Image (cartoon, rainbow, N blue to C red; front, side, top):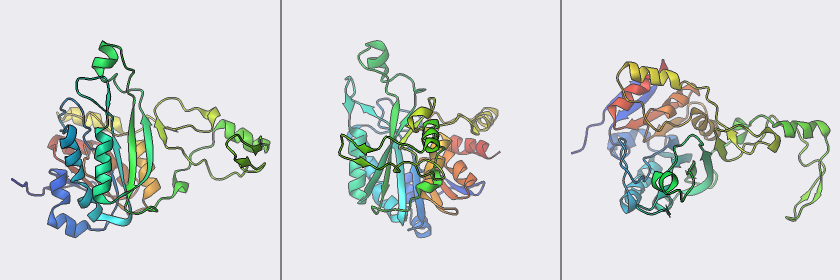
Length: 311
């Protein structure tokens, strides 16, 4: 039976308590937001081997389930809007081999929605628990799986994007180079011919790479990845959940990653949608950056706990 749309107003955003597919296919929702969403940023349930509280399908069911979101999301996306999806790796049940379920799901999503793949990002998280445990810690036949991938899709090959808004600080090595005003120019083995002044223009910062990491930033190697800081409002969120007997979401997205994509792919007053909001990190960061946000979550405890971000 279809659940009636239940919208909660939280600090300037709209939080829908419902199944996300039902919400984005609802006639009233479509009428209100058709062609108006500038960014869909989300981390859907992964195709994990074991069931989680927040729900997850497996195998072909996961592929078919994920594809159902393609057309409804395309319908509410602006002409130059983007969809950014973080998704984890999966393994073959009972075997020490990788499964390509998430890749197949993304390919079908892309095909059904007629989306363009703009770029892929990697989030390296060394704090992840060793997994899959059976093959990593029990039989010792595999190493720890410590990254997930973030995929950027859009309706067009050239959606709105501006990397000037996400420039990072120059590394120590780059600052030395700019100060020295001398570079090892000449022809490379790749065939590229590097001019003496190619890398000596001082801009307002460095163009960031497509890798996020929580480990120490390698300043001497010209910024090999985007460092993820620990300075965020996560303690307020946790304390609020514990104080109100609410279970914190187990898989929260780092605020730095959300902020990166919102700054990169949207403008102030843009509308951001997270169909699998969880703790609502997306809504909180969007609010800080003066964007409008819409979040969808089918666990009322997660919705109530999200109020802790805004204290």
